[in-house]
Length: 150
Image (cartoon, rainbow, N blue to C red; front, side, top):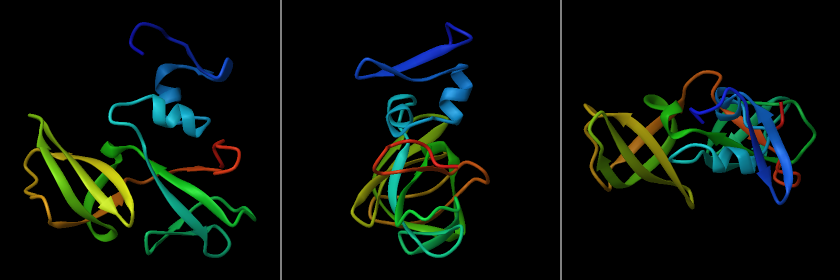
């Protein structure tokens, strides 16, 4: 991504997205792009419709797209989550100190979920974390078409 000012991401012989590297990273056009670009890849959780522009994700309600779909995928990059008083409840499974940050693999409901935290954060395997997304960093995908939903 650092060798070009524009990239194309292909899947099954088709261009899924062509844009600047930062645009592809920050605003993936499809679930494939979101899961392919970035290390660790984006996290995905199922979301059910909870009213106009509201979505239920792992017991928490989030503002999201206004659509008549019954379900969407809530998606967020691991570095875009932070410890908070309210948010998603996650059980830490693996804690990997990586110098400047911690990579914590958690479980939320039945899904594995990775979060990148500051290295000063104290967390041990088995502990429960409450995590909230940074503002404007949540993405939504249609589980049928796999395309981003605005």
